[in-house]
Image (cartoon, helix red, strand yellow):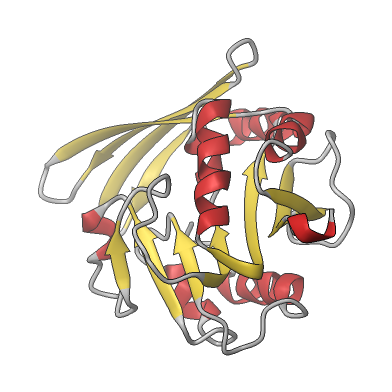
Length: 228
């Protein structure tokens, strides 16, 4: 992620939601990691709480934001939020449609009426791009790494394997698995919940998203049953 322009990313997300969410909004990030994105996003929304399932990531020395360690499928707040967001393909780590529906319902419970949930996802076209690019090895600040990336179109699982060797000789390995759902699947699953798709763009743009996009930025809102 060293080449990511977080300032531009934060600006894009603000453009996406600014007409729905004023600066005073109470904001929640799901899957925030060490809070890097949120630190840039506080330029637009000062009242952000970051959450992640990893206690170690949240306790990064750079993270001074209000933070809570939790699973995004069990959001532990009594208050409700004006904006909830998730970045970095975090939603793709939910490996079944049932878990996606559970996430959407959990978010709906924690949104104010008129609130917004925005998240980005990776589609199959993006997996084929990264299978070509992300089989690599190298060094960064004394740390050696090797990444192996593969995609199984039958299961829809994209796998990234990492071998990491620190300067002191300690070695670690991680396996990351993401489910690559079809474009239409998201709409079908969202229809089963108390949310609806307000906008759907190609990520980092305002061009309408489609099944041929690499990545998609969804913006969901709560259904108003009184108007149905």
